[in-house]
Every structure is written in C-alpha cells, then in structure tokens.
Amino acid sequence: MNTYPMSYKHFGPDDRLVSQGEGNVGLEKDNFVITTSQEAPYLVYYREVAHFLRQGYLVLIDLPGGRFLLSQMGDKTVPFCREFSRQRNLALMKDLLMDELGEVDYFEASYQQMDTRGAVVAGGRCLLKLFDRAMVLLPDDDANPLLRVFYSRITGVEEKNFQVIVPQADGQRLVLGEMGEFRVTFARRLMEQRDLLFLSTMRMLREVFPGLPSAALRQLALLMRDGYAVKKGAVDAIDRTIWPVLESRVAQAQGRSETYDYLRQKSMPDLLYIGLRRAFSVQPADMAGTEAGQTRAEERGEGPPDLGALATLGGRTDQGSGENPQEKPKEKPKEKPKEEIWFMVPLPSNAIAMEVVTAPGHATYFFKIKSRGEFRSVSLAALQDDIAQVMDDLSLSLIDLRFRRTPVYIGEEMFDRPEYVVYKFAVKKLPNLRRIRELFIGRVIHRSLDQWKRDTESLLQWNTSIKDDSQKWRAGNLEDEDAMSQDRE
Image (cartoon, helix red, strand yellow):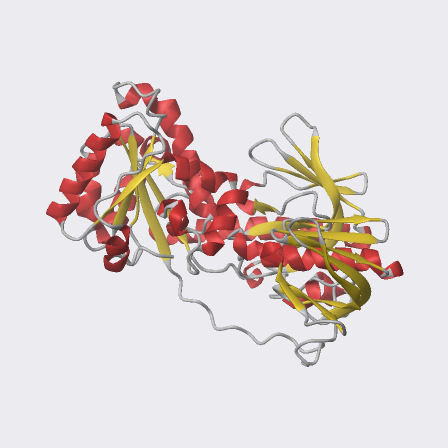
C-alpha cells in the first residue's frame, strides 16, 4: 500500500465539518484508508466515490454521505491523484463487468476519443491495458469514464504523426499519443492481439467445418468474430452446408433442440441467428515470433507486471508480494476449450427468443423487437430492419457481459442484495446493458417441455396484450425460479 502524508477535513451530508487533522492516506486494491492520531481510521471503498477533483494542491473526494478535502501533499498531489484514479478504475472494472482475463501488456499514453463526426468527446492521459479479447482505457482523471474496445470491433491500426489511430466498426476512433519509444511496440501488440483473436475464430471454425474452403472460412469468421450471432441468410450466401452444421451443434445440447425447433417453426428460416465461440483465453504464443507473456516492461529489461504494480505512477513497485521481480510467471495449465453456442429467433408476437444452449441451466429469454406502443401486427419480413438492429444490440451486449444473463433479468428491487450489488453499478454505467434490460420481456425456465411451451405461449400472448414497455412477464416467484434454475454465469 502506497501512503501519502496529508491534512484532511471530513464534511458530513449537510456540509458540516465533522473532523479534521493530519495523517496519511493509503491506497489499497479496493479501497483507500485515512489514518490519523486524532481518531479512528476511515476505510472507504472506491465504489462509494461519486466524484473526485483536484484543484491545485487540494483534492476533493465526494461520497454519498459527505466528502473529504485533502491538502498539504505538495508535489505528491499529482502522483496521488493519478494513482488514486488508476486504483479506482481497476476496482471499477469489476463493477462494470470488465473483469477481463489474460492480461498481455500495458502502456501509458495520451488519448482522444472521437465520435462518428470526428468531434472529440473525451481525452487526457490514460493507462492502456491489453487483454486477450479487448483493450481497456483507464483515464487518469475522473472526468471521463473507462473505455473498453473489443479487438473484434477494431478495423485497423495506423501510425501517423507520432500517433496511433484506432478506427472502430461503429465509425468512432481513438487517437493515442505521447508514448515515446513504445508507440511502435504498442501498435504491433495491438495488431497482434486483434489478429490472434481472429485466427482463433478461424481455427475453431476449421474444426467445426473441416471441409469448408479457406476463402469461405474467412468470410464466416468475419461474420462470427468473437461470438457474434450470424443470420441464416448471410451464411447461406457463403455456403449452404454451413447452417445445417450450426443447427446440429444446437441439437447436440440435451433438451435444447426441442425448444429451438418449436420456436423456429413460428419464425422465418432466413431470419434465424446462431452464435458460436470458444470461451477460453487466447495465448500470445499462438502468434509466430511472439513469446507468451512478453510485455513492454520485459523489453525494457524489467520483470513482468502485476495488477498492483500497474496502478502505480511509475508502472511498477517492489512492494507487495515479496516475490523476485525478475522471476518469470509460472506457466498456467491450458484451459479446456469450452464452446458457447446460442441462438436467437424472431417471433411475430413482437419478440426475439434467445437461449445460450451450452449454459448449465435451461431458460429462454425474450426481448421486444419494437416498443409496444409502436408495434403493429405485421409480417416478420416487414420488420427485418428492426430485427437486425435488435439482434446486433443483443450480440454486442452479450459479448460485453461475457454472456452473463443475471444482470439482464433481475429486477431493480434485488440490486441491494450482496450477491447482486455489483450489477447496480453496471446498469448505471453501461448503456448496452440498460438497452437490453429495456427490451427484456421475461424468461421461461425449462422444467419440462409441456410446461415450457405453456409458459412461452403465455408470455407471447401477454406481450401483445399490453402497451406499457416497463412491464416484465414473470411466471411465479423469482425466488422459486432462481432455486430451480442454474442459468448463471
């Protein structure tokens, strides 16, 4: 724990001065601690910090029940704020469901986030962390939120005018600079990780479709990158032998083909979607010429970084574990590949049925195609544009959530339970999660096929009978559903 000598004032919710004195503020993994000789110490979790601000040599930390004003840190004020921001962001990554696996590298940089019109919407100094499937940007200040960019959404990496430009599929761009000699290394590592992920998708699909020509395999990988669900009409345009194999994967899951067959009979064949991906880490050793675990720090002759070290101002610390910083990390045993297979079926009752067939429990989730107030009973063919948009939203959101379903279906009244409190923060901060929660109609637990059919028909009839978009369908008590279902992440 890094500590900083300081003076403090503690104000209550009515802005009344509660206490003041001199002491130390220490920054830990999940919280900060203020110790003083005048009173008992304060321990505050980063999750509780609503806002913090530096004004000259003063630091203001806002909390739900008051605030702290820190001063007298001198030239340590800026380093303290930077470390505080990074420690807080690392902690908030978990609350934002960004608990990424397989950390590869990290870099310090300046950044500009640009929207589709080229306007700058955020910027400043940041820490860039490269993981197996995504890059996470942790701003040094509290003015801008954390940003996660999946490699599957990066359309290119360009070096220009001592900057690295990263365009994304949605038209937004990141412009990264002030990286010094590590700019080239960063661009190379980012392209490597993007290519590793795509190649892992191609290798997985090669196992599933051993006879598919390489050109067709690449086209399919572009559609199914990182688990995106793909439309039957789109894969039929590549090769008509693909879809029957994908459906056979669904059928291999015990009891799942019955629900899929029942739902698809209500839909249009060309509008069915199936997603497939491997749920294990991509190791850098898969790329020729790249050593597993090689990092920017190792290229400088330093030891491999650890989570605590990444949050420090200098990017490294010798405090903490007591291990030799020059030791190489022990090789982890290879994870057993696990397939995640899921389908989405649009239905005439203003609903899209979604099910992750490889999940340990068995439940089907339903989402609205259009607002109930806007929906008119028309053919699915007339709703193709709306269906495509919702399918894309669902694909992006489920990948963002790592296929967690719990934060999608639980009611707001359950957010204060200890096991769900993490989702309370995520819903406030993640637009994609809020979007699919708004679209969510309800879920049907599969206890028996007859019961599942009855509840499914009940949900679909109910959905077209009401106009209030905020209403959710529920069969029985949620506690009972949870007790009988293992549909968890």
